[in-house]
Length: 210
Image 1 (cartoon, rainbow, N blue to C red):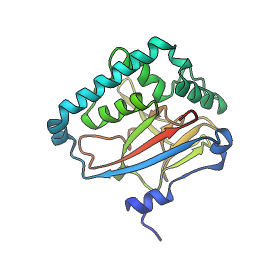
Image 2 (image 1 turned 45 degrees about the vertical axis):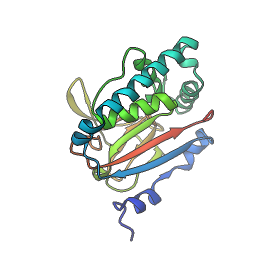
Image 3 (image 1 turned 90 degrees about the vertical axis):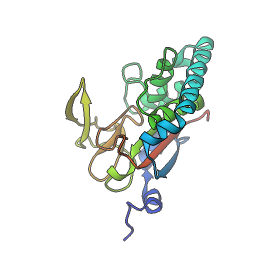
Image 4 (image 1 turned 45 degrees about the horizontal axis):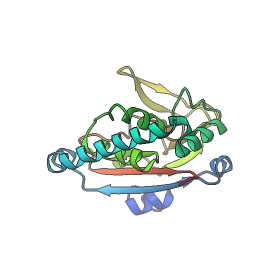
């Protein structure tokens, strides 16, 4: 039996359920594992480059919003349609691309060099990006429609709590629980990147018009 914690075997065993493609036949995902990361030393060595990337993303967001309301931008509109398809209200729970693009107009949140980089890439390329700690995964990443009893480890206003997705909600999960709710809305605590992360797992989502 393959050890799914070996990166190549892990990627080969990840999958998207047919029920998700029934919602969006145009959906594509790129999965990427990056090993040998040392966030603290990386911050010192490439901090200026990360700052430049974030500033470019913020300028790009301002230019986009000057041309069109955020919810009418082609990539964001496509994700709003995808959310409605599984019963989510996009005006209440915005997909990560829309949330970041809106925030970028006044300034992207700064977390650490690694997170700041993929947030900036998401805004610049107009695709949702998620980064997680590969070593915190238990089994492969699977995009499915939730049964509703899965465990999601999160925090609200600093308080740690366990939630459960809604029945039929599109979620990323591994063998022991949900890692990201509503396709790309909110990532869980268990697999979150930290300054101790050494191997990162990235999910890049795409819909037409990519």
